[in-house]
Length: 278
Image (cartoon, rainbow, N blue to C red; front, side, top):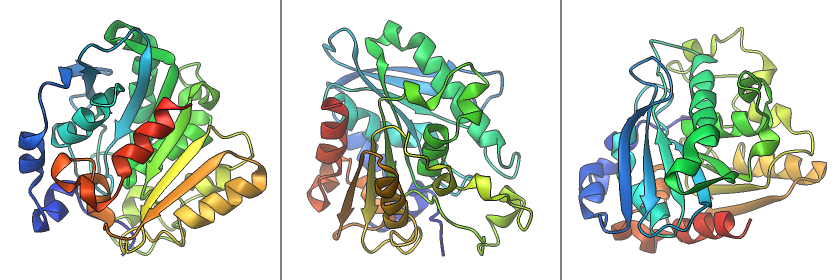
C-alpha cells in the first residue's frame, strides 16, 4: 500500500487526534480561524501566531495528508501549536478533496492558499520573504509540487523561488505506475502523465529541502520516495537534508509533533531548526 489514510483514523491506535489537540498548550499561540482564500467552502485556512511573535517571524504553510480524500485543518491544531511554540507563524489550509475533485484541482487550491499567505501574512507578524511550504503524506506531495513545478504558483504571478524552503514528511513523490485502486481515479490512471510526479521536476534549482520519513513506513515507502528523491536532488546540486527515524510509523511521524509523542522522534526539533536557520 502506497498511501496512508487520514491521521484521525490511523492515530486511533496510539492516541486519538482530539486528545493530541486537547493536550496542546493554548498559551503559545493566537489562532485566527476560517479565513477564506477562495470561494469554495473547502478553501479555508487557519493561522497560528506565536504569542509575543516578533515582527516578520518565519512562516510555515502546512498541508495535511489523507490520500487526497480525507482530512481537515481542524485536526492539526497540535501541528500549529508545536510550530508556534518555536516562534513560527503557521498556516494550516484545507483544500478540495476527491471524489469531488481530482488532479490537479487540489494543487490549484494549495497554490491559492500559498498566494494568500504571501499577500497577507505580514498582517499576522509573518515574514513573506521567509515562507516555507510543508506537508505530510499527500500534503507533502502537494507541497513538493508547488516547490518544484512552477505551473501552480504561476497562476498567481508567483514562482517557487519565493519559497525559503520545503519540508516534506513521508511524501509520495515517485508513485507511477499507480497500483492503489483508490488513487487511480484521482490521477486519471492509466492516463497519468509523468509530470504529475515531483521527482520528475528536479532541475537543480529547487528551494532548500528537508525530507523526513519513517524507516518502517509501509504506506509511503521511504526507499522509493524520500531516498530516491534526495539522491536525484543531490545529483542536481540541490540543498537537501534527509532525516529518517526508526521509532515512528507513517502516522506517528506527524503525530510526534504533539507533546505526548515527541519522545518518539525529534520531528519538531528538526523541522523548526530547519526553518529558523534558513
